[in-house]
Amino acid sequence: MLHPVLRILLIGFYAYGAAVHVANMASLTGFDWSAAPLKWQVLDIVYLVLDVIVVVGLAFAPRAGVTAFIIAAASQISLYTIFHDWVLDVPDAFAPSEGQRAYLNTLVGFHIISLVLVLASVTGRMKNQSRSP
Image (cartoon, rainbow, N blue to C red; front, side, top):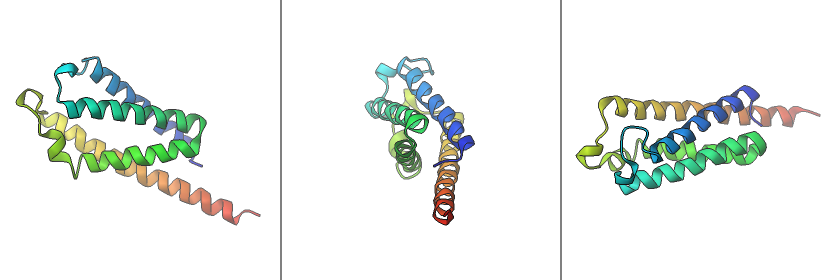
């Protein structure tokens, strides 16, 4: 369904994302997770689950993995664009630095590019399969 290189890259990136969420929950990323805003805690849990589903899905059930990827990528894009102010409306102790804000913008770019690549790969493979005898 996906080009093998793209599939492996996405598995790697989403495994890294899952590890970041686990590190957040273990308070290893610069803030005390138990004191973090509830919405951040919920988002960490939701995206940890989604990231794991993407990784396992892409590795063992490509259709489910692609579906989970599309949900994860599209929701991350909307979260850090449309709902950007809501996500970052937190107590001063948790206000992100300029570097952290830039990282979030990079995540949006990553998700847009990866979503375009996945959709192009799926569409291209579907067209090739329909042409095959």
